[in-house]
Amino acid sequence: MTVVDPLDRHPYIPLVHEAAGGTRAPERLLFDTPAFCRRIGAAWVTGAASSVDPEARTVTLADGRTLEYDRLVIAVGSVVDVPPALAGSAAVVPAKFLSDAMLLRRRLHVLRAGGAQMLRVVVVGAGITGVEWSGALAGGRVDGARIATTLVAVEERVLPTFPFGVANRAAHALSRLGVELLLGRGVRKVLPDRVVLDGGASIHHDVVVWAGGVRPSALVSALPFAHTADGHLAVTSRLAVHGARDVYAIGDCARIVEHGHEWPTMERAIEAIWQGATLARRFAAGFPQDAGPAHRLRRDFLYGISLGPHLGSVVYGARHVEGRWSTWLRRAIEWAYYARFRLVGGSD
Image (tube, rainbow, N blue to C red; front, side):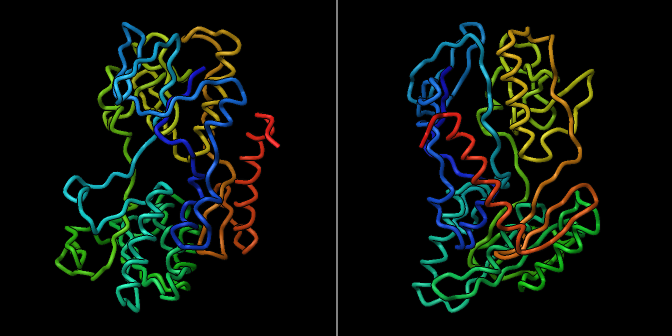
């Protein structure tokens, strides 16, 4: 097995908002992935894939190196879907990776060093990422300065895909932290000093955090395989890429399409773990692409949402409970997740 990735340290993305808010040191979220791979006997290659040749069964890296494969698993994930007109704006910071959180903190520190008494951040997007980053920022400080946080979204409520009870409690928790909620208002454009909303109203800002959804990584569109209408790799329920021999895809770069119908997969990040486990079992048992166990769709399972530095909600279906303890529960899950890798890899 050979693992290819441009990063030699991987962050625990579900808690990256804590680094954005300044309540967690960035290095506490990092895991030494290359060391783990080497301990379990997998080769590690630091690099970014740029193309795949399914006939030659090769992967070409951005630096020109070429790797041969017998079976290929594509798991390149997603990136924040910043509108092209804003992608190069110095005022906009995407909200997903640890590098995004660190960039945001650096910009806020520079503003504070320049004399800003209050830092104004506009978060665009009312999904889980927008809610968690808004709560972390509003509840945090930068060199003693408060972060005045405004959450803007075209949706009429926060967490629009969740039950009303969960969404209402989240909105209440954000309001208690001082987050200003401007819902049902789309962003028309971002200027260097203000965000212009539909209707012409504007909000002054120092930084805009974009949490308005994700799209597949750029590599996916360049691959010579079947794609869904919105650009994901189309895979079967056994995670094989349609029409490609010995090529599989999992996680946020792929969507299951069976009999012309796209499954509602990848609604939660944990599904990528389940897909990886399914694929590992299939490889170990030697199943061909069109036989053996398939990925099972799970619509309800336990997960957590952070609602600021000291409050969180644990949700299962329409039921949810809140408490300070849920913040520590999520950190305990992170610890258990990494501890499992260390145990498997034989680390101390």
